[in-house]
Length: 563
Ligand code: 1PR
Image 1 (cartoon, rainbow, N blue to C red):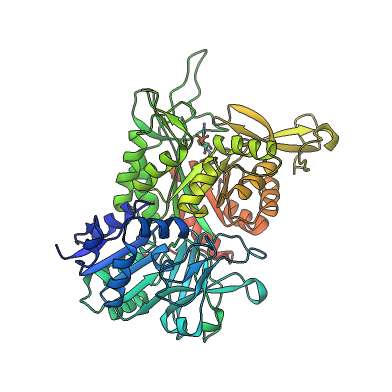
Image 2 (cartoon, protein in one colour; image 1 turned 90 degrees about the horizontal axis):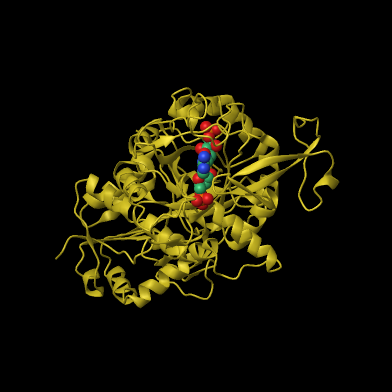
């Protein structure tokens, strides 16, 4: 059968792409056999995950040679993220695994000296003539260093980091003949990104002109993943860093006492209504997960996070409600989706054990772009220190990062303040001076990590946790605060500053937002890459648009909503 084919090797979230293609009124057939590749009129290769595992899969499934043949015939091809990177000669992400070698040059990791790496977020692409065409949002972006011949492939470039030594310019899209690739994921880049995809699908055989036009139209677009591409010498015009701060909407999800899946929200993690006497209050019900996610997408959320907050119970692999939430959300929401809660080894009722990697894979295949690990990250960090500061390759962080890339692994941290009179009262922990003294006048505190949704404190401080998680391969930290959660008094700036300074991976500030000014404050005072809120959005107390407008007014670079 001819038509448009999707080259999927079984890793990562291709559901969102298929949903976007269908929404645009096109059919798409999955490549099931190597011979399908040459039958395609148009081929989309949405590489997801890490470079090494992508290449290994291409070879083991027998797709590499037919793909090279297809490309040599100059048939319409769209590569996305790792689908673009695989065309190069190799990647620093997995240095010993060669790429297809169609494009000269290698994919290199960003330098993290002056900026958070991976590149997670929205950014702007410029044509080589210097026009700004759109904002691309990276789930993660590495960069490609090219030879002079690779210059001919570069369609757009993007700068990450400031001027001078810290700024790096990478290739954000390429085109040559009918080969068109984007480092970002158009299906995760809002409506503008979907239009880029439309241009490829609607165009006739020569895809280039249509895709170029869509890039010009796009205005603002979104995320890429992987390790991105660069050669600063390609860029004939001065570039400018347009990387934006992200606003994340978070949905804490659980079944209420009637068994309906609802978005709930706690104060300091207590999600039940106040009640009289011994009676347990009802679980707060703030709406339906899919509907709320849709609303936040339309209002301009840069990412949406779902947390299954009753995951401390053992959930069988097919935790159907959350999978269904993802499946349905990814039909209409085209920004990155994160799912957290229960990313750990799970045991089915029949006793069958499923490793965390398998659990995560199930979520990725159902529409998640990232998974967020809470309790299991604390246990992995404990093991890391017990082994003298190294992993043994078996933790959820390590296995998922290896298969899907570090950009797909978020660590959700649930810290609680422990006040002390003097640093010597907590000799094994990193102690700071909080803005306000403790209830008994204590001048110091440390932040204790908890597991099981804050139910159990562990002998580990936040700094120890995030350093270990970064070393194990995590790509981002979602930093909650049990003390600030739901209080609407602003983020815990001392905690966030401390974590931001300790690691180089991106940090999402969470817990306590009560006004648009709190977002400005956390961006200005801590330098975090993203800020998350829940309660104020669910209760419509602060519209997302107001948050963005206030940030823009304060001179903070923010993605404006695309139409
Ligand atoms: O341990 O890997 O199974 O993950 C469990 C996940 O569920 C963790 O990410 C943990 O943070 C989350 N969780 C568990 N119990 C609760 C609870 O509230 N009872 N939610 C919970 C944590 C915190 C934030 C919240 C922000 C912003 N929620 O995600 O959305 O604090 O709120 P605000 O803007 O209203 O202040 P595992």
